[in-house]
Amino acid sequence: MLKALNWRYATKSFDPDKKLPESTIHGIKRAFNLTPTSYGLQPLKLVVTSDTHIQKQLYEASYKQKQVKTASHVFVLCIDKIIDKNFIEKHFKLVKQVRQTPDKILRPFRDFLIDDFSKKSNTQLRAWAINQAYLAIGNMLTVCAVEKIDACPMEGFDAKEYASILNLNHSNIEPVLIMPVGYRDQNDEFSKFEKVRRPLEEVVIEINS
Image (cartoon, rainbow, N blue to C red; front, side, top):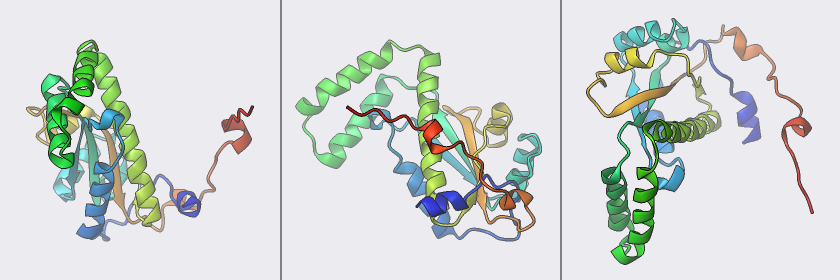
C-alpha cells in the first residue's frame, strides 16, 4: 500500500491515446460508492465523461489545465444541494430494505438526524456535504494508486461553467471536485520529481499515558 502511495503523483499530463478499460472505470465508481460518509448519508453524485468534445470544454473551464483535456476519463464529484427531511427519510428506507431493520429501531436515529439537520443553515449543510466529497476523492485516489491508475485531484475549475457544460443547471447537484484519470504521459516532468513531504515526526503527534 505505501509503495503504491509513494508511486502516485498529481498527474499533470496524460497520454491521450491510452484509454482506461470500462472494467477499471467501474472499479473507481465502486470505490466512490463504497466511501464511508457521515451517518452513511452519501450526499454525493459522480459524473463521469470520456467524451473528448466535452473534455475540451471542461479544459477551458479548468483554467486550461491540460490534464482535463488529455485524461482518459474525467470524474466530477458533486454534492446534493437539497439535504432535508425527505433526503434523510429516503436513506432510512434504503437501510430498512437492505438490512430488514424494523422501524422501531430505525426511528429514534432517523428522527434525531432530521431534527439535527433542520437546525443547520444551507451554508453549514453545504460545507458538511463538501467534506464528504473529500472523503470520496481520497478513497478513489488510493484505489487508483493501488491499481496503478494515474489521477489528479483538482479544485481549480469554474463550477458554474462545469454545471452548464454537463447540463447540471436544472439538477439538484453542484460540482465541487474533479479527478481526471488515465495513463501518465511519459514526458510529464512531474512524474520524475521526488515526493516532498514534511518529516513524519513533524506531522504526527503521539499522546501516550
